[in-house]
Image (cartoon, rainbow, N blue to C red):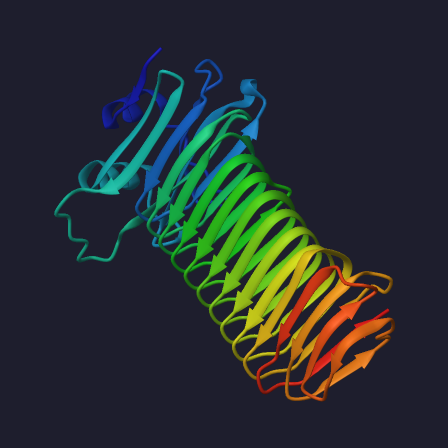
Length: 346
């Protein structure tokens, strides 16, 4: 069944009674329970996008309108006229795919500064793929299985309970991701990233914010160009770096590589993996590692202090340590540059 929502159709058939909401003015509500939606394409030039996986009988799309990001003071008739005159707007459902498009008409210049923000709240079956794009609002996506791609030029990303391939980008907002798995690739040009209770192949990158990571499991790469890195309970293979902040890592189980160009590094390893590599251009490095493990040490810094360094064989000097613990095993490479190093084995 094909459903085409046009301006006349909206006016005569399915334009709902406008009502106030925290999301703005409810402009359109359309049930989708009969459409068996498994794909969503949604684009808007100024509002937010929310997609949630639900029982198929609850599938629907809701369109909300605000005035320059604020709750609209326009009447239902004024909003309808502005959208008809100034926007290319359509909602279609065909071939198990929902498509929602809202964009200013080509060549339109809003000299009166009365541009609307058109947002979507979309509820679809859990097994669904998405392609989402907004030039000014945030994106929230949750409880879906499948391939998800979502992009915003100015808002934040909120990701929860997704599985599959997950690719998200924002040019200026923060990112929160939780309870998700498989293949996660998220990036922001200016905000911080919070990630918790996720597993799989995980890539997180921010150009200016901090990283807060908790309870991640898998192959994890998390980088920032200027913020701090705080991580707790990370299992698997973990690679993290910052160009200017501090790094604080606790309850690390597995392989670890961490570096910073300007801050301090403080690491507590619960269980060693294939390697531990820590590097710092000028700050201090503190590493706590469990006793009883076989280690190959290669440590360099301005001053080196050790605690619990027993059963060691090799060279032990003020600014370098090279040798083995308990006959050798996991490589532990530390280069603190002009900073000091503390190694605690306990």
